[in-house]
Image 1 (cartoon, one colour):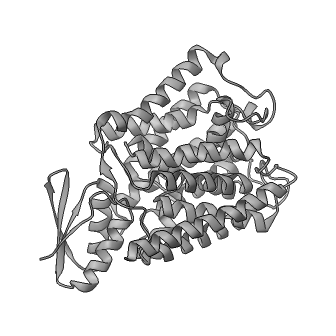
Image 2 (cartoon, rainbow over the protein chains, first blue to last red; image 1 turned 45 degrees about the vertical axis):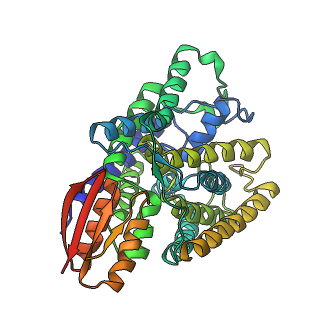
Length: 353
Length: 68
């Protein structure tokens, strides 16, 4: 029997996968209807946090996801300002998750969308992601914790959504403040209103269902629960169907949009994302939703991801679509995985005491 | 019946704490949760491993009574 939760997650997944295909048709880069990592990176560029001219745009999808989830959480009494569960460690983990995502070229959500577009490099990424989640589950079941969060004031919880609104108002009113790509992926985008609407819908649905790309695989490993994986599967099915219908499905390892066929680095990039996501309690999309629901800890993770994106482009750590990973990117990723493992080990040791 | 307070912990930690506590308290226990995700995940896990779950609002969260 399909439970109500699974039904809602399946609907959310279909909505997300279909919206992604539509956004791509309307102008977003290939297999990039949504990508939390890429869109935070583009937003970081627009905010002058890095200066790579090809990846600068205030992505309205991100704004929509945050504001949709915020509005929904307030209406349905899920808005719970809290914080204090190792914020700096969460910043560091978010930073490393972003490095991993930009070596692979996409967050877990885009990995699923790439699979739906026939990009087999995403399959290598999925193997790494699953291995990273498996490693994270070993730590979790051995006692890993980032500690207990405390209740915070309503103002603390509302600060991040408010900041998002200010950025969006400035984007509409004084666009000259921001940088916008004239070529490259940053210049490719659906009309802002369509992007915002798609983001709002996904934010609302993901808040209600707790859609999470890492949570599905994690729950199977930890408690043999197949609820969250339903959303993951539905996004894949909807994007596959959408890409087949619109002629955008191309099976293979090479010639894929914003992708590279360096298998080891695709695997390791998503390994870091999987491990880091389990340590944070959710994938980059889920961190955005939790941040919108008032979690200061997830805001720190999101800020870590934004800082990681800026560093990835300022120091040439992000992979290039055709050339693959950079030397700096390889070093930073391996160092990042070691740091994740060290944090996980030390916090597991502390959690057992 | 022992009480397990998971307030302040984010998912999946409340579920893992419940899983471990059930190992030592096979007859059941009370779990305090302070967010909807934890409430639903703990209840779903307990039901999946064969327990009855009663949920009542308490303070800033919920009290789940898990019993055979």
